Length: 88
Image 1 (cartoon, one colour):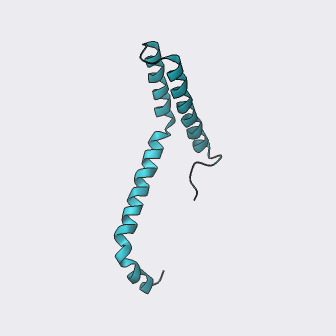
Image 2 (spheres, one colour):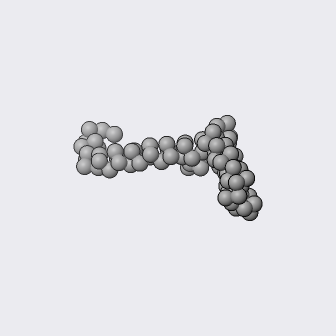
Image 3 (cartoon, helix red, strand yellow):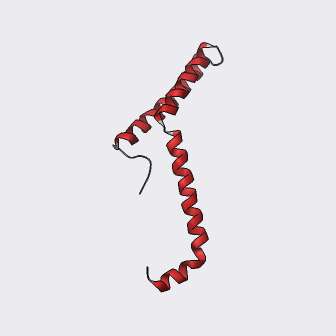
């Protein structure tokens, strides 16, 4: 972009900066959400809740399926295969 384009876009600099910051926050949140170690830890806690009687088998199965789906996505992302949910 030329000098004139930069000058014309200057009023939008705070918006562009805010969008960049939001992208960074979303990327970090997704990284943590799909972290295989975190998902495995949650699976362990879920099993403990089942064993202690805090949740029943049906609730365990539902929550376990969600966590296993997250783990599958995390493993797909780490191997670089498939679509990682972004459209870039």
